[in-house]
Structure formats: C-alpha cells, structure tokens
Length: 608
Ligand code: G6P
Image 1 (cartoon, rainbow, N blue to C red):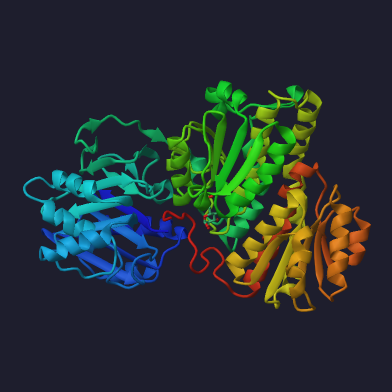
Image 2: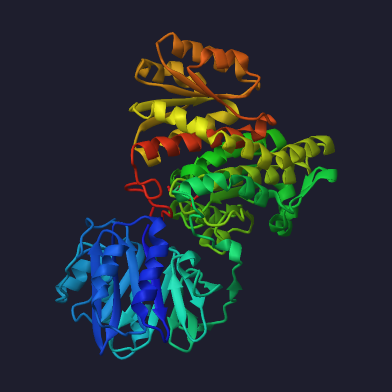
C-alpha cells in the first residue's frame, strides 16, 4: 500500500528518493511521484505505473536539490492517474504533500475550501491537506501544519515540503506508518525501515500525533501542542533488512525456502527443554496479569488471521483460557466485554495493518490486556500493545505471506506453552512439545527437497479454474490458508472449507473439473477425512492429498499425494502448509503471473 520516502541532506535528492521508492515497491502500488525544490520552485514529477518509469522521466532533468518527498500510491480515492498520483499540491504550487492513509472528512473540507476559492485538480482525499495548509498559513508554516492536522479526521502519515522553505521536510503521523531515519547530517522519513536500509540503521519511531521537522543538519520532533519531545533512537540489526532475492526467481520462493531458518529464529533462545517451558522476555513484564487472564481474543487479518485460527486450537489444547478469534475488521462491530480478565492478542506481520490497529485501539479503550505477535520491529501495533513477541523472521517482501505464517504458528505455540505451564500443562507435555518444535527445521528441509515433485504436480493441475481445499481441526485453517495462497497469486478461484461442512454446500460444485486438495494427516480426524474423500471420489472429483508417509489408505484413494513428515498434531499445520505454498507458487509461475506483486493486493494494508 502507499509508500513514503523523504530526504533532507547534502546529496542530490532525486536518486535517493527513486532508490527508496524501489525499496517500497513490494508494498503494492499503481502510480508514483516525487517533489523537490529547485531555485525556489516546486518541481513535481509523477507517473502511472512502475517506479522505473518515474526514474526514466527524471533522467534528463537537471536538478541538484538536496531535499524532497516521494510516494508510491495504491488508489483509494480516484483511479490511478497522473493527476491523482502524489505529491498533491495547493493552488500556488508552493506546497507539496504525500500521504499514506485516508482523510475521512475530506469532502466536507474540500467543499469548505472550494467556497473560499481553492481550486482542486484531483479526486484524492490528500489534496485537501495541501490546500488547508495554504489556507492556514500566515507567517509560521509549522503552526499552519498543526492547525491543519487539528482539522483532519482519519489516518495519515504525511510528508510535506514548501518551496519558500529550503531544506525543510515536515512529517506528521497519526495512525499510518512513518518513521524517521537519522544519518550523518542527513535525515530521512519512510513508511518502513526497508526503504532506508542502505542509508542508515538509526531510526526514530514516531507515535501518533507527533510531528517531525527535518533540516539538513538538525531535526526535532514535537507533539501537537508544539512542544519539543525527546525521542529514543533505535538501532536496527543487519538481519532486520536483507532484501535481495539471493538467486531465487521470486521473493516468495526465497521466503518459502527460508522457513527452516525463520522457524528456528522464532524459537531460538526461547525454549528451555529440560524444564518444558518457553521463555518469552517480551511477556515477562505482564506475567502477573497473564496468570489472571480468563479469556483471550485473537484478532488479525489475511494470513495472520489463519495463523490465529490455528492458534485458537493450540491455546485450547495447552491452556485453560476461553479462546475467541475474530477478524480485526469485524471486531469493532461486536459488543464485547473486555475487562482486565481478557487479553486481546493482535497478530500482524507488518505491525501496521489498519484494521488490526483500529481493533487493538478499541480493546485498549475497554481495558483489556493487549498482546502482540509482530514481525516488523517498532511498528504501530508493537508500540501500542502492553507486551508481545517479535517473529525475528527478517523482512517478508512477497505479498503472499509464507515464512511469517509458519513463524506465527511457532510463536503461538510458545505463547500458549508459556501460559499453559502456569496452569495445568505438565513438564512432560511441555518437554514433548519443545522436542517436536526443535525437529521442525529439519522436517521442513525434507519437504523442500520434494520441490521438484510438487512442481510437477502443480503443472498437472494448473489448467483448472476452481479448487476446493478441505481439512479438519488444526488443518481446517491450513485448507483456508492453502486456498488463499492459490487465489492471491494465481487468480484461480479456490475455497478453503472445514471438511465436515462440504456436504452442506460445496459438494454440489464437485465434478471432474473441480479438484479438491485434502489435508489428511494421521491424527484424530483421519477416518473422517477418508470418508469425505470417498464422497468426492463418488462424484468424479480429483483428489490431491497432503498426508503422511504411513497413511496408506489415503494414498491409495488419491489421484496424487504429497507426503510430509509427521509431528505432534498441534504442530502439523506448520509442515502441511509448505507443499501448499509451493503448489500455489508453481501454478502461478506456470500461468506467468506477477508472483511477488499480484494485481490489486498490497503487502501492508494501511487503510480500513
Ligand atoms: C495483506 C497481505 C497479507 C497479510 C495481511 C495481514 O493482505 O497481503 O499477506 O496476511 O495483509 O497483514 P499483517 O501485516 O497484519 O499480517
């Protein structure tokens, strides 16, 4: 989704802005643009389509400006076009604004400003910000920006420049991500730290309603009352970046193959096998409160929601807690009692998903204990929660989440064990889980060795237009996540269903052109899954099953099967999803799809 990069220093700004935009491309966008100031004149260049096109447009331009702002836009208000691309400007073209988020009261503000004579060019909500600053400006630009922000309803990360103010970039944050990068006599702002990887590892994470002014040799941060704030500078580690493809054709494939390592990173230093406990430093500050919690509500979106669905079963099997799971986008509509007995656990790779953030804010208002599982360090959800655990899985660039999903499942297991060991889980149960966890990286490696077999099967199935994915218990979410992977990147219709529900509807779709992918591990659901597969076979449906080596019955029944190693049932979804990730990848590749940047999707969804 929209990405922002800004620079203020001594080097020519345009190459840095373009490079930063390229690093933000993975977030998903449809147009791009930048503004710098040259000889006191605002220079704005925009394009529909890729950043490379914007780069070509800037190639012949003589512009040595050393400060500027740039943006990749993911259309919300107004279709992708040059006029609607950011930066947006005021009537005098002295003010340029880039924005991530949504200004909810933009229509009302637009009408008010139009009555005063302001002329609007675009259909965007963002343009009102530029005009409102123009309108509020008397003699102090900072005051004008603060007055403007006071009028805005919605969420925003903003970067603003004014052609009368050399070497000054103004940054505002409310609800949308924007961070400050500190270099040597140069300062940056960006939607995420990846964009700044080659320039600085020193970051300041702004909180909501904070305002930063970047100059070429100093910066300061204020609150909305215009008071200067002291903010901590965080230093990111090399592992928090690493954004090249390392020889893989796509980021998605690289990330699938990184799973032995990302799974290990999720539990590294966090397990004490001979005590059968997990050690989660991030939860220690709230451990007393956690011991009193009666209920946990898990909230998340997309793949993180599917992780939460598995998490529900994991928590149910390891703790005494009542567990509920809710899509973050639905959470706020529910009338829930959230007092100090309740913990709300947000799961988010990006730490910035607007729906999850809004839901967690709602839970905060009602007094619940807020917990998080977040991959991107220092992000809004990590900041707002009372305690939590980082994935430490490194950046995930492919829009379709893979390594973060399996990492989330590991952390959910560690969290459930952390709580469960204060309740009834015994040492030997804890020990068994941790021993099984430790084996996962090697078992994942074994599955990845089957890459070629999965590729061949994917090729065989790539011509179908519809797929049903079925599973039960822990692997009902696996079916949903497998189906999501396929539809996200190959644009093939796929539905994930609990196998028992099949007879209440989806079975009517089954014929020889509608294959089913059945997730059939050897566990308590095995016999029932076999029955479901029989029902499909009786209707000429094709079956591809994901199962275990010793599962002779299902292997015989299936048209094709992929075997994964067996682990304890609560961890089996971690292994079962891997062939389904590869299957989706190879089907999409066979169809020639843009795998890392599928149409209409965004990696970090910062609008509700
Ligand atoms: C988008 C991404 C998905 C992700 C979901 C939730 O839809 O494309 O990969 O699962 O957002 O994102 P989060 O960052 O909160 O996990």
